[in-house]
Length: 149
Image 1: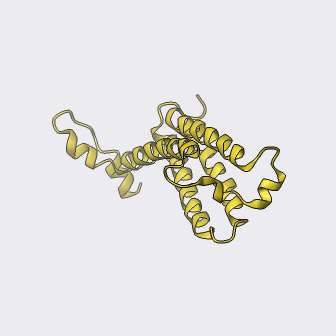
Image 2: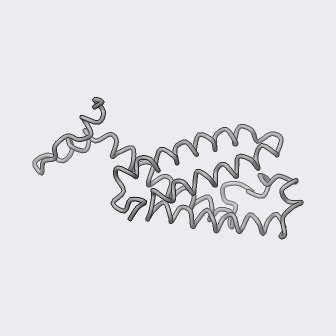
Image 3: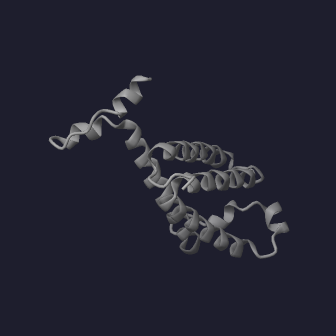
């Protein structure tokens, strides 16, 4: 067994919770990813309606717009709703929701690769997808409602 797993499985004690929490890096990593991948898709999805952060419509590839049955802005509103749902799914079922977010990010990456000048954002989203996959794997250990239940 690796040292990290030995540290993470340290016995618990009600006497001093702070040192116990500090000795649980895997659980902390899970919680950081769980909270982040629940909150951030919800915030990004909601911002599709308000554009406080950015005008999200600019990220939609023109070639994708040509194949849509609705306008680009309407599609981005639908994207916002899906992102909110994905964030909520991560919140309640991270073992499923994290895979949904990773797949969603890969779809975004494909779109971004079709838009010159957004390759840096595609690379960032690939990194985020790796974080979502890490959350999915960690949820097998820490999610009280694992995939099979």
